[in-house]
Amino acid sequence: MPLGGHLQAKEKEKDPKPPAWRKTVETEPSEMGLSWGEAQAIAKDKTQWKRDIVTAPCPTGGNKD
View 1 (tube, one colour):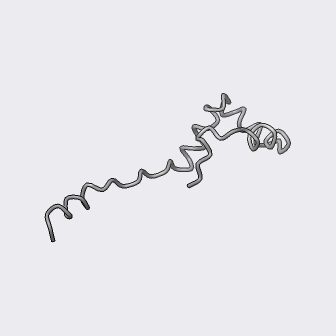
View 2 (cartoon, rainbow, N blue to C red):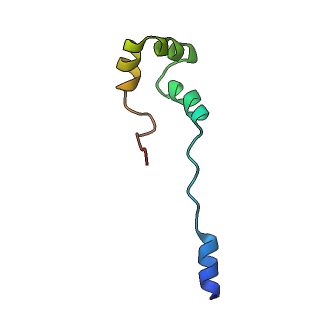
View 3 (cartoon, rainbow, N blue to C red):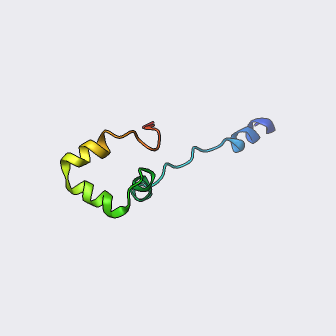
């Protein structure tokens, strides 16, 4: 095996892991300007949840790759 090919394989960068679900749940309410208590209250009211959360733009950019 040529030395150059071996180095190129080792230098390949791995894709970073996506954030864990728990981390996302903890950070997204604050990014939307909500306290944890406000987020819990909104989650209990389906109508408000759909209006404020589901239709809001994704703070992470909406990339679902």
